[in-house]
Length: 189
View: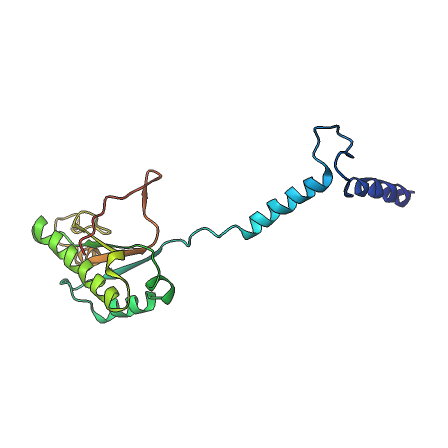
């Protein structure tokens, strides 16, 4: 008995899916004919499928300068060479470099150290095919530590200071503050 009811209900439901000519709908003159409805539906589905994908998420890398100075050590070169890809090297995405330091020395010295570290990374990128006009360098000096520079007793936190001597690199995208894009960087290249 149940099978006998399902078949007519299914046929009834499917009958509403057939193409009708303009003006043959049951909903009156304001209704869109079903063939137009199907066309609109196909176009909407096609647009969703063919819609370009969102831009790739930004690629990020932190390059350490644990021993100080501004020369890339073997670990930094290895990290950078592993990070390079033909897609973004030859592309147009912006490359932002934020140079950091520890708190040893004056504010001015630490600002210069952060800038010199970012410049060393920029030079490496340029030597490997990244166009200079895509690169923005910002020195934050000692202003944005990832680890405490000093221990609670006031002595140097050498591990923290090593971690703070770094360059943060972002390809594409831009960090946000309070949901709004931040753009206060200046290109020093």
